Image (tube, rainbow, N blue to C red):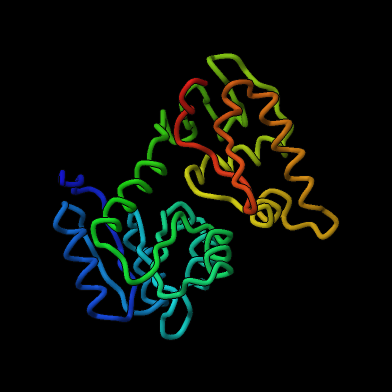
Length: 238
């Protein structure tokens, strides 16, 4: 298997030493730099300080749970874009749904194949790392240019007129590209969780965004039962 770039840092969070050793060995073997933590609180501190590319996060942790860690990661401006692979012995569908709804990028149950874990880590990093920054204020994904400072959007060089809410929704999806954004999370981020706003509002705004963006709107993918995900590249044939 080809070695991974040494710039990619992975944080492994699990209170089982055998699991930590197994995951660390196989990730380091293909070239990732690996740090480890046995508690949720320490993991949060390391994430803020070290800014890893991805966190392999167990759900069953002493103290604060993996769900709580994930929720705090996504709520913190400095860590919300870190990719997360949830690793757990829980197989129940509600746990998977909760983890993905909170912003996990993928979910792997124990016992697992180390080779599959390495492949999933690589796939997540490819999905979440393909936006090329032109400068600190501009994101470029395929034909789409998003200028944070000017609150301006262009597709194939042509300016697209968006309302402030539409721009905030698009920027949220782009900044969190490659990972599923639940409707509740989008409501909280874009609409500040206004109590009179219904989830249908999110769907209507996404529909309008797709229409205004034209072919680039195909990068906004519907994830049935969860919400939306912004693709890191234009789908083939678009």
